[in-house]
Length: 199
Figure 1 (cartoon, rainbow, N blue to C red):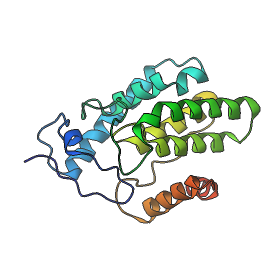
Figure 2 (figure 1 turned 135 degrees about the vertical axis):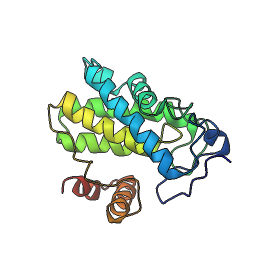
Figure 3 (figure 1 turned 120 degrees about the vertical axis):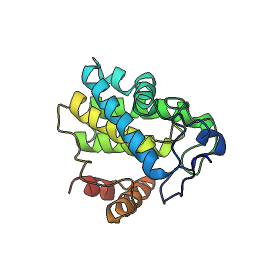
Figure 4 (figure 1 turned 90 degrees about the horizontal axis):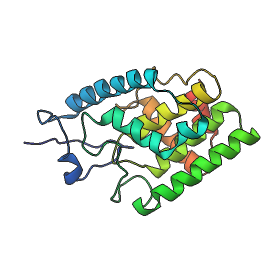
């Protein structure tokens, strides 16, 4: 039978080959998928509690990012933690991923060292640019929200963003506003995105 997903605005469309890499074969619908992915992400939070990260460079490194993604979705998808190798409806051409991610890491280090923006804006800009690059076949939004929180907590000793009260999965007013704010950030305007999370 296989997994069938009805896409919503803002979803990354998975190819048939990527869908075939689903590990729990009993899953046939989005509700089941959301549940097992959420359980796996909760495991990743447990892993983060014991993970020692000594420096900002280590935290934002490609290696850490890939490891985090694998911990988040590695029990659900065989491609978890692996860089996207095909064009998708969201994200840059796959051959540009590593270059643009390195450029983003360099930018974040510049912002950090020069105090270019407030910590919340540094975290949000990093979140947005990583979503825009779209390193992985799926799970990019969740991954980058966790990365933004880790930057705030471990680099700036600040409280994480309160994402939990918002529903990023189902079609609703907040999700629509959030996706519109990401599109505004694509054009260089971060005000809407900052307002969206600083309510």
